[in-house]
Each structure stands twice: as C-alpha cells, then as structure tokens.
Image (cartoon, rainbow, N blue to C red):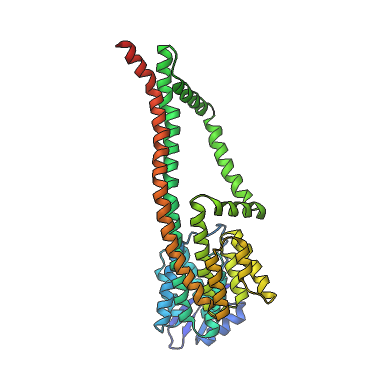
Length: 399
C-alpha cells in the first residue's frame, strides 16, 4: 500500500503535516477528513527499494516489544498511542521503522493483525494468528500477555540450548586452531633443527612432521575444502529428503539427541497449547505448530495429526508413531483430548519439559567438559611430546 505525505490545518487551525498509508489519493483525502484535517497538499511518497535480505532485528527485541505492548494495552492506552510510543523506544532503527509503519496502517483503518502480517520476516504466523484471535474475541490485552509469556519462555529455552552447545564448539574450534598453528609454524622449526642434526628420529616425531608437511603443502586446499563442505551442506539441507535424514540423525546423536528431543517436545507443546488457549482452531494451530517445529520429523508427525483430525480421529496416534514423543507425553495429550482440557495439559507438559531441558543441559555440560579436556591434552600434548623425544635422545647421548 502506497504512503502519502500531506500538509494542512487541523480543526483548531494549527499547521499539521505527516504521512498515511492509503490505496489511492481519494482514500487519503477521506482519511484526512475523518481526522478533521484540511489538506493543502497531498503527494505520494517515493518508494524506497530495500535490497537487504533478511532482518537484523533480534528475537529478544520482538519479545520486549510484545511485553511492552501488552502492558500498555492492559493499562487502557489507545492502540495507536501505544505503537507511537513504542516506535520511538525501539533500539533498532529498522524495528522503529517497522513499528511506525504498523502504527500508520492501524491509524488508516487496518486491523492490527493485518498490519503485523505485512512484516512476515519479523512477526510469524503464530504471532499474527494469535493477535487476530484476540481482536476477534475482544481480548487483545489477554492474548498479548499470553504471547509475551510464550515468547519469553521460548527465548529462554533457546538460550539454554545455545549455552549448552556454544562452550564445546568454541573450545574445539580453539583447539583445532592451536593444533593447526603448531603444525604450520612450530613443528617446521623443530623439523629443520632435527634435519640439521641428522640421525634417525623416533616414530611419533616422524608422524607429526609428516602431518605438518601435509598441512603446509595443502593448507589453502584444506581451508577451501572446509568452506565448500559447509556451503554444500547448507545447500543439501534445502532438499526435503536430505533435511529429513539430517533431522532424524540429530535425534539419535549420543548426548545431544536427548537434548534436541526434549527441546522439540517443549517447543511443540508450548506452541500448540498457547495457540489453542488463545482461541485458534485446532487445525490452524497444528498447521502453525508444524511450520515452527524446527525439525522435519516432528513437522511430519504434526501434519499427519491434522489428517487424523480431519478424518475424525485423535492426534495422539501419529505423534506416537513418530517415535519422537515419549509415551508419557502421548498419554497426557490423549487425556487432555478426552477431558476437553488439551491446552492446559499441553502447558503442563511444556513446563515439565522446560525443567527436563535444564537437567539435560547440565548433564551434557558435565559430560562434555572432561571429554574436551582429554581431547586437548591428547592432541596438543601428543604433538609437544613427539617434538621433545629427539631432544631427550640427544641429552642422553651427551651424558
């Protein structure tokens, strides 16, 4: 929808100017008359072409916006005023522009859900559908609070998982970097010294020197190969079969698989429960949950559940057949279906699995730390020992 700039006078006679979104100039004039503005000039604002892919807005900013918006609406402030205040408070300049655009859309008569839906990269289907349900049911303040709670818990869950993965990944990367640096710069210095001295070197030293020569000869090829592997892997994951295979493999990884499974169950139950409690229909809620599952195994199970409901059956059998959901979860969902309290039951399961994720993260961290320490000690310590073995022989000969 194009944006129009205007200048004119208000009902009190003061000079005013600003922008509104409208389908055409005639609709713009109608909007100004409704707001008791007597326009002296109206012109269409030039469209800015944005070539940037994706968005730089952080998830925590969206969660903060949702909480603040919910608080203001709950306090009885008009929606346009809330959006105006929020558009000035956002840290991200891009987010400020987005909120200002939403404010202008709402001001011109668009519903809040429609205005949010124009920014799909920031506000996903779950966000838009819950707001729409709140507007339809006249309980927008309640829905926004529920949505804020959901986003904050989802963000906390994501931080826990990232926290468990970041430490070992960083340590391994540092260890590999140190190892490569030693093989490329330190070992060749020792190798030259040993070559000048002559004699037969110990087997471990010859192996390390051979690896060092290989790294020096093919260093750029190794870097290029690593980059090509990462790019090729990301491209391969665009294929549904490859993505399904990878998502299935992740669930079977030792240690990590248990954490990924529990995280997926917590996300699924939290998302579906929040949507159902907000008045979204079961089929629409399952469709949105499938899109936000983050794992194709779960996504396929949820879509089979949709077919099961459409045929008049329950959602539990497809979830059970997926092999992802523990029997306890399936049984609790079944009980929730039969008693008519599925949303409450899903919320209880989500809270339980949030605690399970905490326990899994703690267990994984305690397991990874000694493994990483042993890895660093064996690799780096092995290189150092291999380099010092000839020196011990030399010292022995001197004695």
